[in-house]
Image (tube, rainbow, N blue to C red):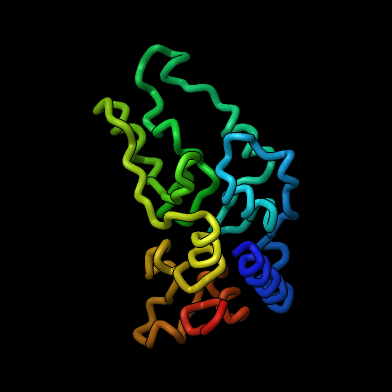
Amino acid sequence: MSNLLRQRVERFKTAVAELELGDEIQILDPIPVGQLPEVMHADMKAVYSVIGGIASESLRIHDVGEIAVEYGRPDLNEVTGEFTDPVPRDWKNFGAVLGGFDFTLSGNTNTGAMGFYDPEEIQYAVVDGEWLEIQEISPHPLDFFIEFIFGPRYPEMIPEDTIYSSEPTPKEEWFDETWFRVLQRAGLDEHSSDG
């Protein structure tokens, strides 16, 4: 499956170049496995063997430095003796979807499941003394990146009014969200047949 992800990433990078969006979308070089935390799920390591992070206006996937910070972060609940960090311990943040409806992308270090949460919910979870609920959207890191980040299910992560213009035309004709425009150009959107 990492070969399929690699193929999609290459198609995507070609489309970025064709659309001259290299300043707006950056896909970082792969990270050697030895530089990744031991506790990172093996399938997430497989993802990072293909991409070393993503920097764009609408999507951010952690680079090697941000990974080190996230995985090296102490358990604040233990440090402070109070419930101040409601993100479950077996979930590690690996990125964010941005654009006025920000949410944090997180991966389960035990199962590999991918999910997200609204960072604004953290304050309420702390007040309520409850663990944050992570919304699982994919059971597998490679599937998540193939289908949601570099594939036809990307729109499922983003509110439709962000991707499509407000013009009263069929949604297929109005793409104003940069990442999705690149997916279209690469043939990785909902109309592509293979991947």
